Image (cartoon, rainbow, N blue to C red; front, side):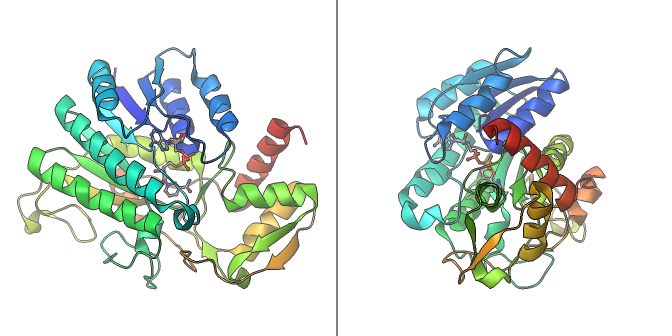
Length: 337
Ligand SMILES: NC(=O)c1ccc[n+]([C@@H]2O[C@H](COP(=O)([O-])OP(=O)(O)OC[C@H]3O[C@@H](n4cnc5c(N)ncnc54)[C@H](O)[C@@H]3O)[C@@H](O)[C@H]2O)c1
């Protein structure tokens, strides 16, 4: 039975991934420090739903503690490591930049070291659509140049992609980096727009609509996203014999068993349509407070999912109306409103 080590298992995506893997009867070891970036009670509540399930174990520690991480991973002997723990959030990276260096650079380095030492068969790392930065050619392709990050968050994630490439090359560590596109759904993150807008609309408070509402996002429903991660687990990159071994449109490195893959819904949704989906799900109208662009934000994101589809056959199943309906239902139930 496969053994999967999931960092950030009490986080939004980590929780859903662990849930899916446990449903399949796999062994899952979670690692998370329950950091206070947003309400730790939500993380504890996610963790409580995993604790006690057959095949689940958990360690509470910081990524920045190399000894704790290495010993924990060595004791579990994972086949696959899915590294999701990170300091997330674009806007907070203007307020607390050092926490991004610490978790996303130092922490990631510790994961690389521990994974190499354990002889992990496939290392999977969370990156972000934000690495496309100021790119304007849409939809975003993995083979596009991505050198113009506009937030420190994105810059640390791009650095993580590069660091992992060097480790994949030097130590033959098969590595897949995912670029996630605005993930939402039940048990979602309180710092993100789907959550913030839902809360404000249900409480009758105005919502701050940035970029005067002229923004677009590729919203990815969390259940679809973790299904894509699961499918990619079976598609570990193999070092090609030079550039001629890399197919057109594949981001596979010519010199290492390393690849980056977009996981999005493949649809560009206008902020207005997204707000309308929440209004319909909540049965209430939003009061819009139109604002300028926030520093570090990008106007649009839109994923080309064709590499993911080619590697795994994956197709997203959940559109924004259905997804927001399920999110609002969860929100009402969880907060009793
Ligand atoms: N949610 C999205 O839309 C989205 C989009 C792009 C990329 N990502 C990336 O996906 C990953 C998972 O995101 P999420 O939405 O589940 O975020 P999350 O904040 O809910 O989960 C991250 C978890 O990591 C833990 N953590 C953070 N720093 C840590 C540290 N230094 N040591 C140990 N644990 C630590 C936190 O306690 C948290 O439970 C992150 O790497 C994030 O950057 C998310």
